[in-house]
Length: 515
Length: 56
Image (cartoon, rainbow over the protein chains, first blue to last red):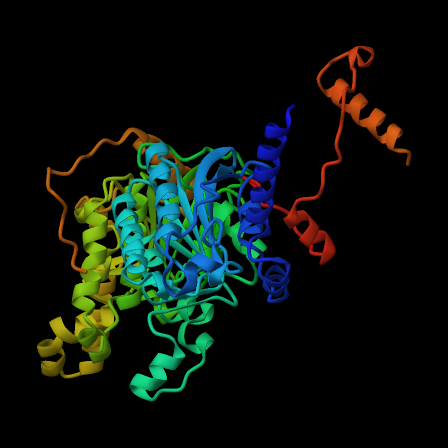
């Protein structure tokens, strides 16, 4: 090797060292001391061992305003590339807080966009790890344009490839809207998301609030519903991303992986888990875990709108999406947040051809001025729209109550359910017996010599006639009334039968879901 | 343990895994594989960590 070769190699090695050094030992130590990994360590934790390949590692900002040319940042504060997760390719970006606070400028955004474009071309998931102070002010409008380029790509990629955002530090201002457009948001306990931070809030409204109380993981997972998953630290969070991807296809043209697991039919215990008395509560998660492959249920948004449960699971190794009324909270009634939560999940599953299992035990849409004024009509309509629009296999099990509009909204036959099962204790009616008798028996009760006895007589008649699944079965709204111990076998068989389902919607540019 | 012994054991393992007669293996050079930054961080901080694998 001659000296020219050696000089060139030395120069390359020197640049590689500069890239690897990121923001320097002090800033890396500071990142570690706050419990956070560096951008490249996160990539290593995200991908299968030794598979991460970095792209465009030398891209740097061309900005020279405000002395930017004197503080050249090789890599421009973001690491991008590809690797393999469970042996399947995925692309990712990881903002590097040790380099310029991970601020986003023109080149930084270009790196992310290039990785997103590659993900689209390869039809592979894209994971965006966020840890950034926000727009790079020195680059002015080019920073804002960079965000716009990312939002645009997020939107175009929606429904084509799974997009996952991981918030592992600050994510403020316009930066929040990329995660918001993506399919799932993971947060760590020490991360924050807000459009305007505490200082601006104070100056504009006078309200004093901490970062955590304004936009911490707890707030977004339980109150706003922005975050789908929360983990205590980076490593567990990235393991969560790996776990989620195990349920998903690579794109809307791909299939989910079949994961053989322990199949234990616990259906026999279902009649012990679910009380026949429809007024008694129980945890529907126990029903889910009895029906699906062992340890396969992966719950989403578990702290938000707890009156409805959503998540992925497997039956006979195949991924399904589950929507279930949770009798433990608000008796499982539907309200604004539950409608939003379930609708978005149904639409995700439909985008990526994941079959849906709906477990129904719903008394009503929650009544009250708070719900009406909050737009329950508009939000509840999303649920009807999402189920009706979904062309994936759709199986329902009516466990107990299925009343009124809420019955229709929970994947009823009329909104396109392929197979509807009901247990013998199911009550499928316009409303519960007490309310119904008060309306339809009002005059008869008032005219009776013994109103209380008349009411009891009418209640008995109503219960006998409507509070069972047989009228619905006779009229074809229920395909079969089944025993609890038959449930898993029946559901598995239905999904197997529906595997080749081919239903298409009429051509349209897109529908107009009531947002 | 002697460095030469470690190398000999590693070569024997690789040869066995690949079904190659060890007598036919010649080590031309080797370099020590350093821990990755993440592995180093985990070791330095005594963190209990297992990367999630599909089906767990």
